Length: 188
Image (tube, rainbow, N blue to C red):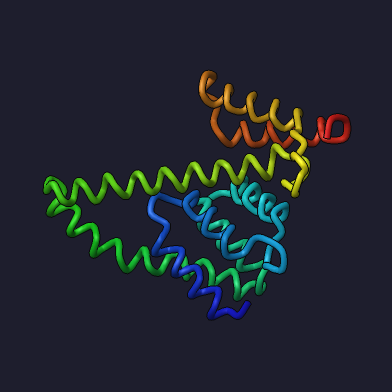
């Protein structure tokens, strides 16, 4: 993919990604993940995991890594700039209207609808993560994918640590990686 196409694709993503980097996951999946595309599903899952472990927003990290995989340093720069450019341009304009008209019923309705759309994208991202992480094989015609019980256990432990023990997500991700490394050779 050319540098210009990376920039334009990520500009499009930047225009559509209200609510943060997790909204980017379904868009990236549709554009870059699959057979004869830039990333395999497994490599994409690894890319998202790496972007979680590195400092910074997940959207920027993911754009940088995807651009780098596609076209090296200049691809990383183009993808990152493309993702940020629309936000910088439109945020200033949008914030003026939102602040001025935030109590107007139409503005409240627009923001409410945008939150619902963003929620749907987050749920879709969770489903993508679950498919990449919990299933040993992709769904094939006439075949049910096999569930990875060790992955399910790690996911449940992680959820419990975050929800009830109030662990920081960084520590949970690191612990999950360690548990995955330890359990994978034995449980798969």
